[in-house]
Amino acid sequence: MTKEASLKFHMGMGMLINSAHRAMTKRFVQNAMDSGSDISLDQWMVLGPIWQLGSASQKELGEICLKDKTSITRLVDALERKSLVVRIEDQLDHRVKRVVLTNSGKQLFFDVLPIMEKTREEVRENISDEDIDTFKSVLSRIINNLGDGK
Image (cartoon, rainbow, N blue to C red; front, side, top):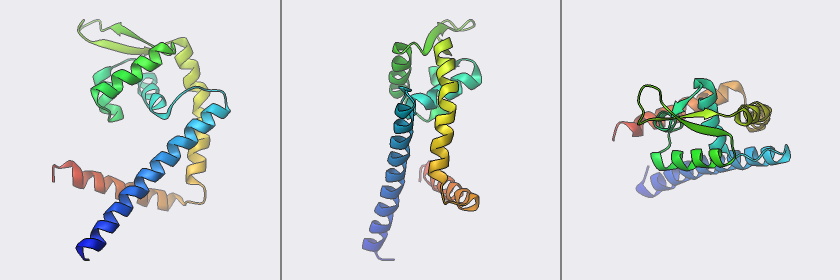
């Protein structure tokens, strides 16, 4: 493969991945808005681990969501302004703030579950489980290839 063909291939693959991500994000937000829920995909991705863990430090959220400290702070701030989460002092390490869902946050989490499921179904429409598994496998290999500092 020539350098030019290789460049076009890589740019095309990256653009396709980026376009797919943007389309999925846009569809989730549209589905949420259609149902009357005011939440972004990034905010939803933060609510899930908090619900699952019961509480989480911002550092833990960053690691789980693959977001940097600034992004997590911004997301938690937005969720806090919407009264969906609160920050509380960790009982063992007072330097750490734990993020906990409020009752409104718990309710929103359960309200948005069907929206997420609808979006997943729309994403997977006319795509076999085998193709989804192959796609995930290839993306995982790409991440592993690039994650080793190569």
